[in-house]
Image 1: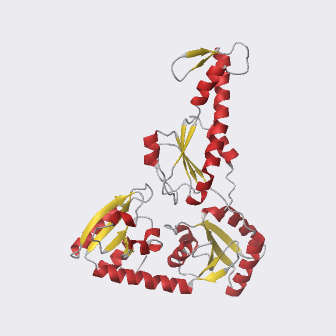
Image 2: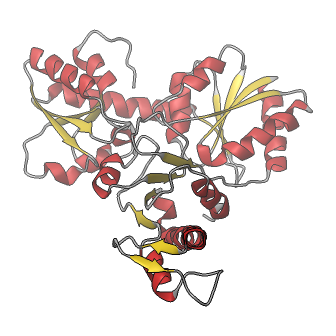
Image 3: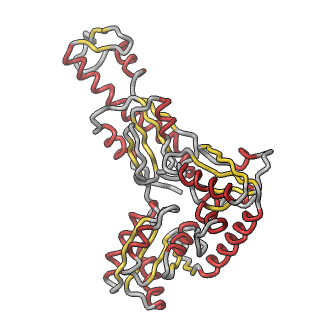
Length: 366
């Protein structure tokens, strides 16, 4: 997918920082890794040009240029506009450097703080997401990316669906990539006497949708997958329709919701029969939840089960090869239990599902 990276704007923002970074750690989502050479090359060249110009100005002002190696080299005798060749090479060797994280990045909860600290990075540039509230001692620039779509065609599709459902007030939920374009729909739909409110959907947080539920008669999820849409539907009492922004396919979630519920209840049933549990804790800063893990271990042991807490940055099925584990309890990203459960070869349930299975939580909740 061809995103407009807006690298010129990003470079300008970095240049505006009071403390100029010498080493920048860049994080990109999986779909953007094919463009890391473009990102790295542009930022190093653009910031390097500014770095060189600033050192040139300092050299002209002082008559010398300070070498990072601790020596002082005279400013070029034949020019008042440029550094000497020797000084220029020294400055270029010490211009800002860009390092790209090769770790998978699935959201702003996945901020590469440990990597940045080990690298002694002065700045993290995190592509593709908004600030998730992860605390960092190192400055972070969040650089969301937008996908454009034909909003006029979506308006007609939404208006027709609203007429069929009898809705005059709706919520439009979408992910960060479509949020900018989706917000444009609000004014256009208003002209068709439909009050629309757009909000961002996260896979682990549907508070924005819940906050709007009392005012909206129905909801649309604008996106290409079912993970976020199902999350919305389970969080809300009202109907959610899924609208693909490119194909314009419109679908209800009734059948998918029932299928998902059956799958989850089956996973819980199998987990009840398990004797040994692996409790998964991610060390990613926005996913780390040792409190729930400790509570899960206590609950399992009170019910006569064996439980061990495992931690990792990226929790992968191969980490548990050769271990006698009957079931997993996930306290990290909900996608592990939803999208990746089949890869583990054993039941994978969420912390909420564990409480439904062995505690007093009723009814079932994912």
